[in-house]
Image (cartoon, rainbow, N blue to C red; front, side, top):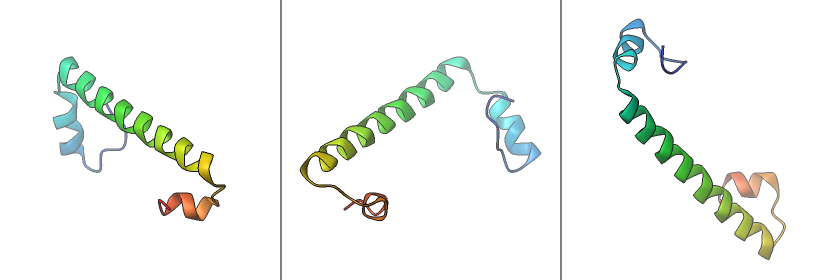
Length: 59
């Protein structure tokens, strides 16, 4: 299977048939989202020291 964690055998079969280009698009989008969140978190941390709870709540 291409991705682990599908909830059903049917979902796993659907994902198994996705093409490499689509997989790359998904990976690139996830990468961009993670990078943006890390950058935002770093900027927030520069101005003030947040607790883990505050970071999780996006404050």
